[in-house]
Length: 327
Image (tube, rainbow, N blue to C red; front, side, top):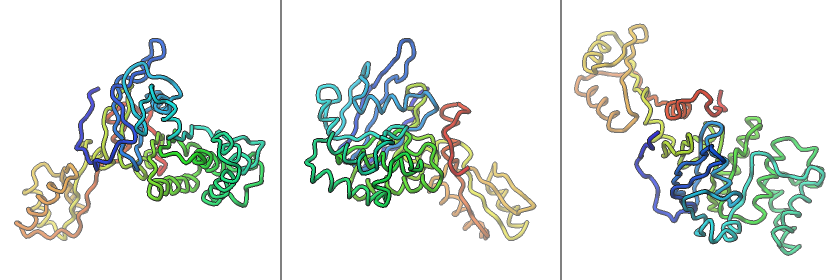
């Protein structure tokens, strides 16, 4: 499948992550087949794809957990192979399943991470207390993690990732299994990390709404290749089906409008007209110009674009799309 090029809306900030031609295979199975990435600092990048597309493998390679078979990458300015210790010093990784010790308390889990980061005891306690407060876990700090809800465990897992004060965080499906309220709490925490601390977040997710809400840029991975990349709005404009819907006060105006907009679809019962649109400003302006020229008075105008579910299904040609948590 050919990669779809999109206008580059990046701001020119230095890349936190860059990769060219990443490749990985397990035996005869090719998992990644030439993946290119450019992720600016202080942004959220979301990687979408069907099960088995290579999302987790991409995270494992960029976080130095497994080697690539080919290609080059730099993370936090460090070469992924020659400067792997520098990469590991700059990143934090939260996997699909909470990596917390259920026999320990929340505070003990954080202090354990502080010890692993070789922090001085006083600094470790200070950082643990600050993270417990930030993640609203102070009241549960000395309770065994085995008594925690799923949302609390995921928050603690992310808090443990932050003990080392990473500049780049890999979040591999961080909200899988959470209820909608817990998921939105995690979103607020992730946004705060980016806005308040300038952290870069590399997010893989099975929730389309999550990518839509959080990501500055989204890439769709399919069969080991990036098949499209852009902002959520740019991706939505790639897919046919966008339209502008106009409603009119009477049938006469609807008749005139239908004559002026060739190929439009009319609904006589609702006195409405649907006009194909790519979602762009130029198309909207052209529609308004026609209405002005014909002195037509539309009672309402709404612009509809395909959602990320449509994008995913069209680009990958699969029925096993990621979940839309709004449904």
